[in-house]
Each structure stands twice: as structure tokens, then as C-alpha cells.
Image (cartoon, rainbow, N blue to C red):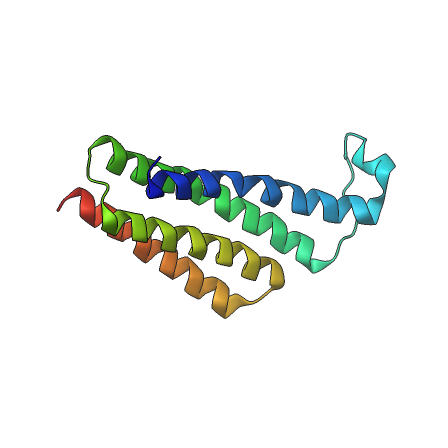
Length: 129
């Protein structure tokens, strides 16, 4: 498996904790009965739970685009050392984005987002090189 695909796999697996962090935050506030229910009513939760929801949504909103670009590079035979480095940077930036979003750090969050976009555009650039 190439570096690009390993990074994509890790990024896909990163979805698992991002999916559960907001639910754990709500369950810790509302209790096990709420967690095992239909959750028709949402408990009052700390602000970090809302940020966790937004971090998860942002991750999911971007994952399909990232996967498409990396997979197209693989399928077309355009994956190379440059795309491998860009994939590593993209992976680290996306994880940093999620963590800084959870922590409520807007400047590092925004910087990591723009770094991930630059890395993604680097892979796109290699598709046409």
C-alpha cells in the first residue's frame, strides 16, 4: 500500500473517534439512560461538545473530496513522492484541525485548515503535471 493510501486510511479511521466524541460528551452529561434512548431531547452540554460536532461535520464534509483526489492520483498512476509528502501533510493538518477545533483554538484551527487545502491542491497539481 502506498503512503498516500495509508494516509487516506488513517484519515478515514479518524472518523471513528470524531463520531463518538460528541456522543460521549452528551452521554457524560445526560447519563446512560439518555444514551440508550432515542435521544429525542438534547441535554445542556459544555461548549466543547458543540465544537466536537462541528469538527466532525467539517471532517465528513471534506473526507469525500480528499479521498477522491488521493484515489484519482492512485488510479491514474500520478501518485509519486510529492503526493506522498502532500498526503502526510494533509493527514497531519486534518488531525490538527480537528484537535484545535475541539480545543477552541480558532487561529491554529484555521491555519491547519489552510495547510490541508494547500496539501490537497498539491496533489491536484500533480494530477496535471
